Image (cartoon, rainbow, N blue to C red; front, side, top):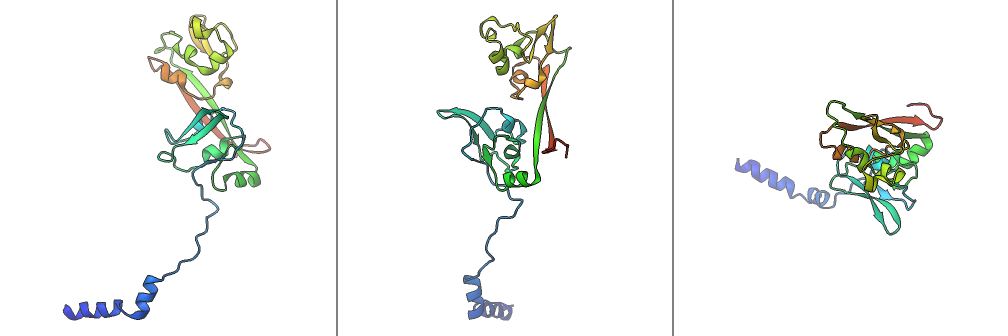
Length: 203
């Protein structure tokens, strides 16, 4: 046993071995084409469409906040998984993540997001909380702020003929405020994402 240990010590303390160990050199680090880093701002104007938040699969990874210069997405690195989906879905190019935008440009691809709102008629008690809480509804019908009842058919949803009805689902931004506000959990907002070529064909 002792002879084996002595042999290993002699081998490890050889000048050539020590030099190679202490002054080892590796190949230069190159970023692979598929690498996606944490998204960063490009300086372009955010339109507050919230597509980046809605496509993000990691809860709490991105927030779009109001600043002195307008709306601005903020990345929470502790939650972000660096998938790059927020970068790909943003039509304004507000975010940059690795080579995502370059790839989209050369491949002529993008994502389209739609939001489907479903209301369970059994659970819904027609209180109207979802309609009143919806930020898009408030923009369209300012009377909601003090009346609690939507009167315009231009809103996303409202009580009509004694039922809560989704009238203009295409206006939904997917913020899920209605879903979170409903006391009976009767409403769900589902995100539907499709990849498309620039010519409009599905991937």
